[in-house]
Structure formats: structure tokens, C-alpha cells
Image (cartoon, rainbow, N blue to C red; front, side, top):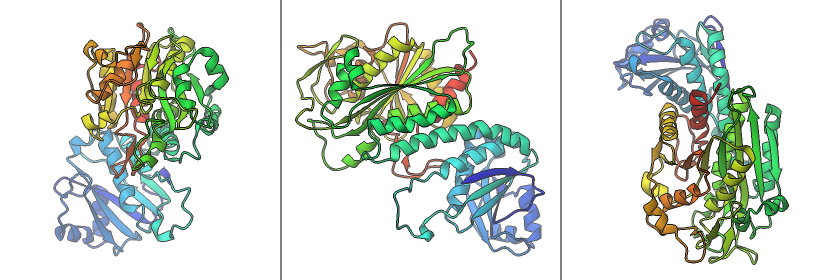
Length: 500
């Protein structure tokens, strides 16, 4: 869908969207339309339960006196409570209401509203951002869908005086949205389409944005001693890959070391020999969600020319059961030299990340590493589907991530780490085992990952198992792949790491 900005003096088409405040008070443009329709809007208000609460809507179809197919009155609630997230949510509501309405275009009449702290251009840009995010749809494999079931809305014009300012503010937001969509596309693809080598092919699109790729094949990883990652991959006919994506947006920075993002990229997870139950196993196509987010973040940073040095690492494997698959009881040697006894082959993500993070540190010397993984079902038991689990060895980094989560509505919740949990992953025959039992499962997984972080590196682990996929719509996220983490990490970079 196309989102544009235009002067209110230009021609309006299709549906009109206007605003009302808490208590049903109409905006200036809504008041003008009420007069043009002979009081039609106020009559509709009088005969409805519409009170102007944020996100509340009232639609007047085929109004007299104007060329609009319909007029949608959208509540913004209390004007002094309207912030960027609220504006994005309102944009999402516009698409929710009009996406399948039959209208092909809509004009949003944006006025200066007393009490709103956002400037008009900022309000418009975030409104457009939310509308665009909500418009995402993964439908490439539908061949018999009826036209009535397809979205009709093709364009939305946000009409305001400061068109240039709105375009300027929307440009980086559009680039971030492109990164979110890049992630959503990867996560939504089936496993017969996205597997390690085809994932790499998708990443080559980033080179057009100035991202440099480095790809390691199975032979190179074996030479480096990546026994943990290769152990996961050995049961699959699809060969593994390890990819580094480099964006050098601050070549003159005093500290040229990058911030690093590392993603678990298990393109399909059967559980291996410790095979999962059949019910719901189709969802394991998005067990590469961490790698998808890292790819989307690198897309966003490069597209908006972020002034930061960043590297994204994705470990791409498929976890399959076969005569060559890793067995429970096997011992693998990681690139770091540490050994892991594999108790459960379905606890494979930590094995992939162990080698990926170690290689990242040896190769790129980052000052900070943030890894993302759909790592444990235990985090869903702890936090449900509303927060990602946050584990960190650095309080400042944890606070920055929590703040960025609030800014983007991609919430994280800090979980504990401690020596007591290390006891659960002690092995009788190796340095550690890959599971620590049912209790504190997400914490013991993080404890294992922490063993592969060097002492001078700030580290955070985001367990995104509960937030990578959604079975219901929310304000700016249609059901399906969410892209959770792209906006979170882009905001973290822009607020704390960019231009330094």
C-alpha cells in the first residue's frame, strides 16, 4: 500500500478520515465536513455510543454534500496523551477499518489539535508509519482468493500544511518498516522455500544498501572447530551456513568496534532425534526468527544510513532426524574449546549461538553483543506472548533495551542470571550439558550462552519465542510474523550508539 502526504488544498478521493477528541468534540476538518453534510456528522454522533476514545470509530456512509464514499470519525482520546505510539496505533486503526472496505483510496484530514504535544509533521509521519505497518500481508501462495477477500485499499494520503516536514520525518520510519517487512517475509516463508542456502540468497539483497556479506560454508566452519553448530546441522540434507552482515556507517568513530547482533537461524526444527510432537510442528518454520530479526535490523540500519558500525551474524541450520543426526548423549566441542554434552537434541539453538557468538567476537571484536533466539518454550510459560525475555551481564545495556522496548511497544522483561543456575547444567563427562531440567528452562539456557561471552563484552540475550509469531491482530501488527525486535534494536542504536 502507498502512503503519501499532500496539502489539504489538493483533491481528495475515496474515504475521508477525520478526528474527534475525548467527549466527541470534532476536529476543525470534521466540523467543516459536518457543515457540508448539513449536520450529518453530529447527527450520527448523537445516535451512537461514540465518545471519542482513542481508537474508537464511527463511519458515515455515502454522506450528502461531499464527494467522499464514507467519512470515518476516529477518536484520539485526550489530546495531551497523544504520543508517537498512539499516533502509530491510530494509523493502524485507519488501515484496519478501510483495508477491506471496498475503497481504493483514503484521505486523512489532519488538523492542528489543541493540547496535542506532537508537531503536525511528526503526528502525520507516525500515523503513516502505523498505517503502513498494519498493511503488511503475506499472500504470495494464495491462488484462488476471491477479490472480495483481498484488501481494496491501495493508497492513503495524509493531508496537512507541513508536507515537506512530514515527508522528512517519515523517510527513516519507512526504512525501518522495510526492515520489519524483510523480517516478516523471512519468518512467514515455509521451510521448503527458506533453508540455509536460500536464506543466504535473500540476504544478498542487502548488498544493494551497502551491507557487506561474508558467508562460511560447512568446510570452513569445520576448519574453525564449530562442532556445536555443525552437530545440529549434521542430520539434514540442507547444508548449514554462517553469515556476517557488516554495516560501517561510522568509519571515523573513535571506537571503530561494532555493536553486534547474533541470531539463531534454525530454518526448521523437528527437534532432531528428540523429536517434537506432530501437533503444531508446522510452526517451527519460524524457529529462525532470531536470524530474521537480525537481518531486518541490518536492512533498517543500512537503508536509513545509520551512523554506526554494526555487524549481524546469523547461524543457519536445519535440525532434522536421520541416520546421520546428532544423538542424545553425544559430546560436541565448540569453537571456544568448551565441550557440551547433548542431552536433548531439541535444545539446539544454544549450540548454534555458542559457535556463532564466539566467531563474532574473534572476528569482529564487538563492544556489545545482543543475541536473539526463539530459544525456549519456558519463556512463554514465564511471560506469555507479550514480552520477550531479557537476560544481560550489563545493567546499563539492560536498562537501554527496556527503555527502547517501551518506546516501540516491543516490550522486554529482565530475567535473573546467577551461579546457582549453573549447577543445573553441570555434566558428568563434559564442561556442560545443553539442558538443565524443566525448572528455570529459559534461565539455564541463558546461563549456557553466557559461557561463550568474553569478559570485556557487554551482552544481552533476548528470548523471543513468545513474540515472533502472533495468532491475532494488534494495532500495527497483523497476525502472523511480527518482526518483533527490528524496531526495538533500531531504536536502541539510534538513541545510544549512533554517531559515537
